[in-house]
Image (tube, rainbow, N blue to C red; front, top):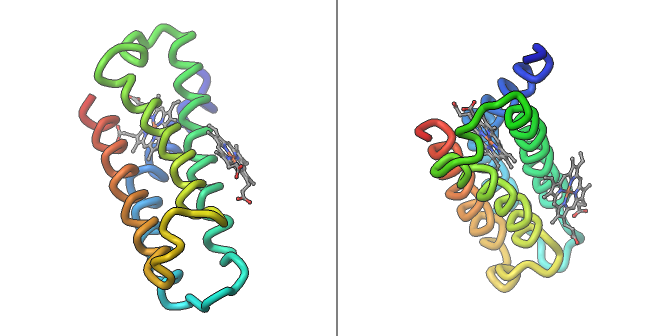
Length: 132
Ligand code: HEM
Ligand code: HEM
């Protein structure tokens, strides 16, 4: 496989294991501490879901290349749960950090609550990739 795709895999793996989990916890604290009622959406709440989008896109690229180069377990259970949960995580993160998010009535704790859900999804998905 072309080295560029190995690099994409490594970036996706390090971002998905080490970087994202730290960023999610940092976002939870930042959103709680900087909360103001009726303030416009925080830049952190706008940018954070896009980081999950980029993570999902890197995974998608490597997954597709892997399928075409014949990595057969990419399409079989249990690994197949990983692409599925990863795409679900991207969509859910946009919902939970969006303007009409279901946690809005939690006010200051909406950010930490959304972050907690996303942290569980990201760590679960990393576990699937590491173990499958
Ligand atoms: C929130 C989203 C995601 C997270 C947190 C995540 C996390 C990870 C991690 C941590 C690894 C490395 C596992 C290891 O250490 O061996 C990995 C590998 C991988 N991920 Fe993701 N991922 C996500 C989304 C996706 C998506 C959407 C796809 C595909 C559509 C995908 C495809 C892959 C593939 C193909 C590998 C390589 C597996 C291998 O080489 O055995 N990921 N992912
Ligand atoms: C697997 C790939 C991706 C998925 C599943 C995905 C999913 C989503 C979803 C569900 C939304 C919310 C749309 C809405 O609010 O109506 C969104 C918004 C957005 N996405 Fe993605 N996306 C992906 C890839 C990307 C990539 C590669 C980028 C750019 C590098 C990107 C940048 C954005 C931006 C800038 C927004 C608007 C954010 C906001 O203002 O709330 N996405 N994406």
